[in-house]
Length: 478
Ligand code: ADP
View (cartoon, rainbow, N blue to C red):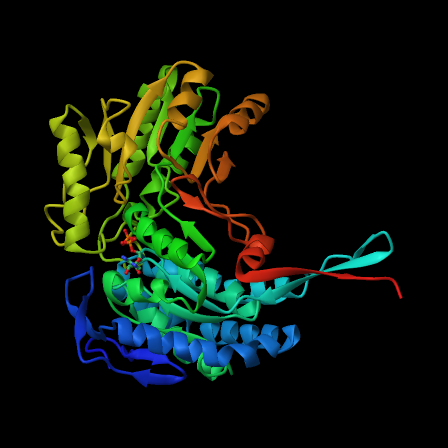
């Protein structure tokens, strides 16, 4: 059991708790307290989990869709029953706001299971004929799915992959991030209590370069689903290439938020301030504010007033808007980006460093101007509460700036001109574009990134296409 929380931090393999000889410490970003010593797996545990998942595969794959859907709904029920506990543990573990976990994230975790359980029953296509022969398409389970997930929204992002993988009839080995390993372990208990057979969902804990690398290299794995950073994605894609295994990569971003002079400026400011959510640790965050010159001064004035009213502090408190960043190493990385930008001539309109009174892992919401288009702070993902502001004079310039990084995850356009919205969205390179809104997400929609923001799409049909072997059966006329 963990020291600070009631979570079993051993691996979950084949329906049993399994310890490792070594452990690693898991600290809370809120106050750096030790939450748990967690099992530190390696090649042996990865192999054992794949063996268990492989053994469980035939029976789960042969389970009817309706029965699989029933179990997934039962898991969702289990999540809903334990929302307060899940939210409290996740907040302690990754420092994101308790109120967001309670009202947004954990309900969405349950929804992930419900959605893919229901969607499973809709994926049939009508048969069609070729010279009297019928073509019948089926979505067959692929086998063992290795899922590697990050720390910024641990259970939400893990279940976004686990739910369709299980719904499709696969078995899963999940490797959660070592900075926030706890709720994945609770999910294993919830799934078992909901009737998911032993070995269908396995959780191995440990460092990415150890247990994670061993897991994705295992030739018995049929699919690799990954959400995380570009450098890690290169390792994972390399392992997938060696075994010729389909891989889905959801990576980072440096998304633009375009503010045109014709827009509702208060809306633009609201949307811009939202980019500080989760202390900026959101892959979709629109961290590059691109503002039409004629309204830049007024936009900045209103933005500063609004951002200055944000309350920073303990993420367990209802009134808090911005909590801590995840880890000292990560905070140092965020601060390094800001320091180098300031040294290169950027100006901090607000923020510009760690929070001096709160200390710990709290970083002040920061807005930097006077940044060169090719500056590191404009082109690299910071993953902290740090925004840059650049101005433009024409629509063409706005689009060119928006598309000027190696990423292409998302973009937000704020304008009151419908024709302009159409023109601009058509030219943006991004997996998701929001017009006059942000973060509205439907599980039926494709989600993923262009360029180095990812490979593949998930959501609705796209998830099942990835997690299944799609078969066409052609039958001759009788
Ligand atoms: P982040 O910047 O979000 O921490 P990472 O890409 O470092 O992103 O981590 C995302 C996930 O990838 C984590 O679960 C981490 O343990 C895992 N990971 C890191 N390195 C490897 C690797 N070489 N092989 C497999 N998984 C890895």
